[in-house]
Length: 439
Image 1 (tube, rainbow, N blue to C red):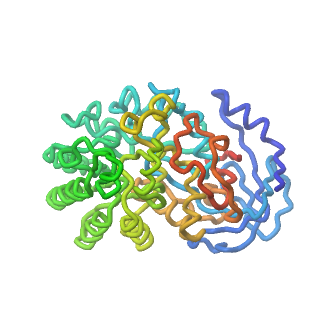
Image 2 (cartoon, rainbow, N blue to C red):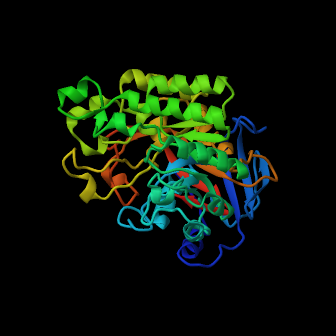
């Protein structure tokens, strides 16, 4: 692998200051384009980027540039998008800072991420939206804010949705907190229509879930762990869809996990409801058979389900019923994760393993589709790879394989459900917002 980067030292200096990155040119050599919407799809070309815009695409470009990128078996697609990412800052910086989290996202191939509001304080005001956005404004990765749907994510009163929207929040939801008050969801969906807002509702009926920890199945009984039945998810989704049919508006259901949930979403779309949903990478790969290890990294929310569910999720993603895939990146510090299973916090990091894990299941073109098609739902501009458009690229090599170990982890927290897993391909980084970030 060869990379010539004449300007990288200067770039890194600017990233660690409040100065603006100067205008620059980037020459990408011999890249295979994966973009079905582009005239250059599946073609091997050089790309010259000037001040964040694609200036030239040609078979060979000999123009000099500030940065020249030449990488083994380089593939290039539109920038990848993740609809559900958590860091720690503010309040839990020991888990992940915004600065390091954005670097992890970029080196994992993501040009755009939606940051969840689960911090301390909860992001439920415009001032917090602005403060977090300002911390990320000079980075190559574009950070978009999900504001809390309710004040302090307590599920009692709506947060300042319109005010947060005016200051840049692009969606609203109480991360991993179900909306138990059906009338509150009704009001939120009605109110958000005033500014075309996207409401998120976490799919779990807490009364049915009770104090469950894992999927209710023979494994939960076998290992003596309290179960969460599939009904808890499916009942909540059914309720939410009835409310959406009544109110209108836009609803997004994050991280569905059951075969029945896929059918419910499919039927709702057939009715014409404005509904989207996502699935996490971990739920496309892992089943509740992993519980036999009593490994706390497999303690996820929602829980890992059965092989039948995994199969339905994969099919739902491929046929478009499931709109997007997410890493559901949730860093947890070692004190709260490496403890008894019952007491461990929920969650797994996922940005770094997203592409390599998906590559064990799907084709390269399918993965690029899954990782880019959710942008429009969140009103994030897409940029076809053609001259004159903004340069918003993910750079990767779909070939080869490696075992993901703790020493590979870039995130501050190491709580990955895929430690020890063989991943396929290599992510090189991104070109985005006039900048370049490479591993």
